[in-house]
Image (tube, rainbow, N blue to C red; front, side, top):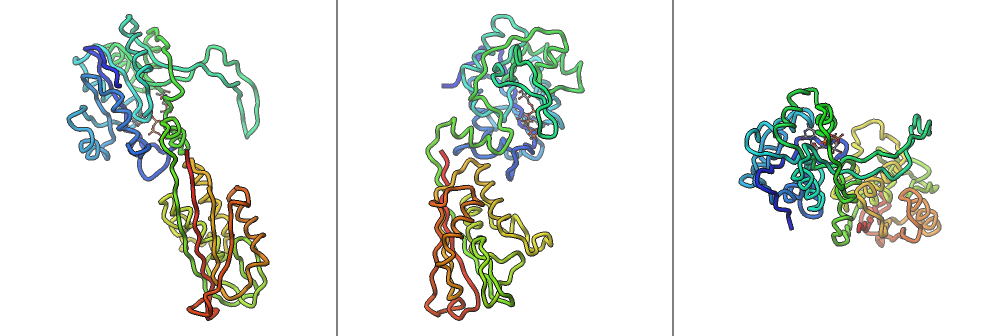
Length: 381
Ligand SMILES: Nc1ccn([C@@H]2O[C@H](COP(=O)(O)OP(=O)(O)OP(=O)(O)O)[C@@H](O)[C@H]2O)c(=O)n1
Ligand SMILES: C[C@](O)(CO)[C@H](O)COP(=O)(O)O
């Protein structure tokens, strides 16, 4: 159910930010959240409003028109959130009595939250906005240490949509072109009383990469299971040891590579990137970059594992197979499993390392190098 707004109530949805803190290939509001974009979910929440103005970045205008034309009025935003809001307000001037201003980055706003703001405005408030009381202790900190505590009584975490009488918030923006963190701050600067309405823990603002996983959990979407595979080969060359799955093994040859040439760890790292649709090691650690010359491949594996966790995934299991005639892997397999488990941060029982020969066939059979294949399962939900 989408709440039906009273006549004269309009909405502005701000979506012109670049989402730098959230990362990803494109701004957070355009990224997928369980099958629909963050922004599509935010826009849907205001489907019961007669007028909705969507503020987007100039670079996103084509996509916005393709996705939302006909449902909302689309205008171009500006450098700051306040300036983007101002662009939306100008588009609404004279066309509504009240406006609710909402972050396009808050996709899970509920009817109850929107209804609370509308209700307060209908009862005569010039401004009303949802918030939640701060429930954790508050500290000041510096250099990773607590320097002081701060009282939390009377403190709230501000959310959106923030609702206003349209002429009053327009006047506030015109009087303060320097902007503010949010629109309530501008209303306060004008001396308006702002009613606090009930916020919701579900109404999170997607800000950091891990917020996508939080939002997906709140949506209660089905478990997301990802499988990835990786394959790698390194040739033998001069040397007296090889690195395999993080363990140094004395050998009659070394493995040739830009990094430490740990073929097992590379295959596993690529399997994780594959499960995340994040390319391969070369994309994240280009071989053309001299800083990775001779690098410990644990750096690559840890990066991939951290990326999976940042996306909200836990490790189901990983299975690595080394393909070579020599050296013998069996005596080292347990140590390899332990080392891989340590780097990824999982119990050893979830990591398998095994080996096979290729029956003297092919390049591994001729002892020219070592190949490895790996499979990983990631789970979320
Ligand atoms: N110039 C801007 C900046 C922000 N916003 C919007 O305001 C909301 C809240 O801003 P924020 O979470 O800070 O988004 P970004 O500015 O995109 O994030 P970041 O600071 O991480 O780059 C978002 O929906 C964002 O798209 C906007 O319309 N115009
Ligand atoms: C408007 C807002 O979402 C209210 O909590 C918040 O002020 C936006 O802050 P940001 O620093 O632009 O993310």
